[in-house]
Image (cartoon, rainbow, N blue to C red; front, side, top):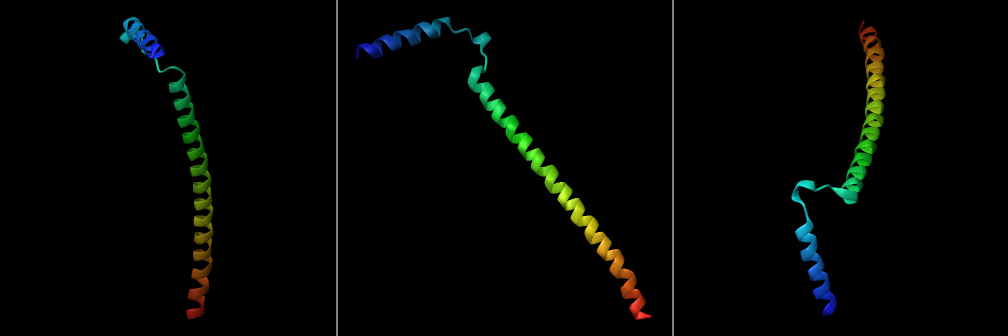
Length: 77
């Protein structure tokens, strides 16, 4: 019980010394920001990979459409 009263008195002292104008995010804020930055970097890397794959598939489909169109029209003649 004595430990609780000592810690409570420390909290009161800390609250009196706490300056609301000098609040900083601290280490936890930095860690959260770093994790979010890494997540965004990973998502951007993944998005670029998927966009390149979609571009490649689109060019392949476009190539197949142009190569099959003349052969279809020549078979009708």
